[in-house]
View 1 (cartoon, rainbow, N blue to C red):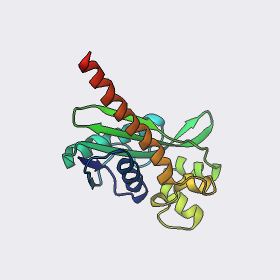
View 2: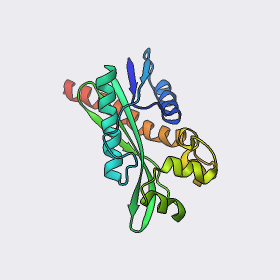
View 3: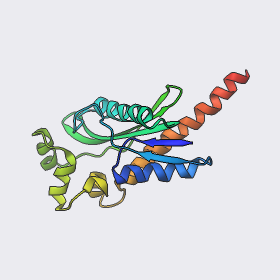
Length: 180
């Protein structure tokens, strides 16, 4: 089975490899590619972040000719006056079905919010905040703001478990419907 991954971000790729190899017992091949999300570089709503994940999954499926393809997108969203991290994943299947799932949300400190509202992307803002490079490839904002309790790869693993679980559910459900 060929699995497409719509990113070259090592935290996201690592999450897909971890979850998919644990739950699929087929012979697997993976291809990860950079694809455009079709949304702004810094998604600023739940809807935009979800759409970015879906776009990545669909484009990856088409470009890799995979059996299934994953798209993962990180963004921010406001609930009332509070800005939260939000993260979405999508699984596009060769039959045209697209499954989606969301992950953990955590409020961002005001000094981070102000910079995002001024047009900066979260990744570079976090790099400046912690005086490191490539925070988004490693622990991510979730890792920083949970004091290392959960990192970006683990957060996306949770989303991927939801996607893979839905995939298996619908495989069983479809077979039951076909046999009815």
